[in-house]
Image 1 (spheres, one colour):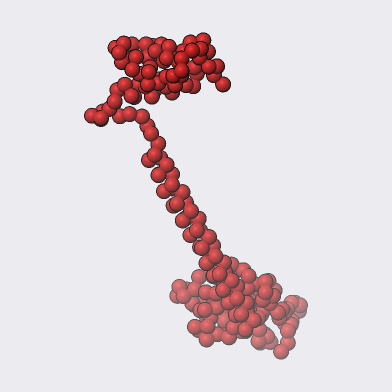
Image 2 (cartoon, helix red, strand yellow):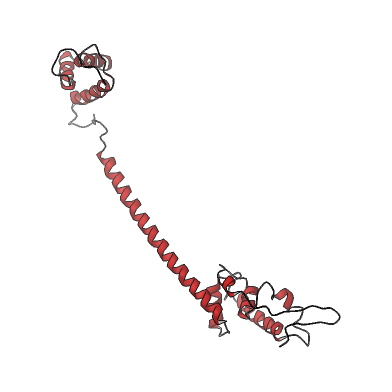
Length: 226
């Protein structure tokens, strides 16, 4: 079979160029023209319709150009019938070609199938990783909810069990313990804080609260805060 075509006074050629199967099998998709060339074992960048269409009607057209035109007609009809898309993933294109009982280069078929299997394994591994991450996130969310439920937001004054003096004592203790000063007793500082923030408290209430909050039980000169 002649590899070159020479038409009239114009020198031109449709040259058979073996496809780089390893390269094309890795493509995420093929155009239909690329798929045609690959089924014919030809390099799509060198053998395509733009070149083949100029030769296939001439009497001395090569078998390659005629086969290209015939295969292209079949594939375009399939495209118009919505059997295939353009572009199309290699495994989908080859599966369609197999259903049509078209000849598929064995190396192309093996390369595409091997890459598909590797991709499926990679997808499964990715799914497992994402599943583990989702489980970790779910666990952390539950833990956060548990911790949030343990946070004490103070006494609810609307409850019947609300202990007024105890609630004020907690506030007083928090305020004084963070900024207590040398020079006066803790009880005195607490009493002054109560008078400033709760002036309506009775003296007996102030006394009880100050006694509850006072961590300096021994008396004497107050310790210097650290």
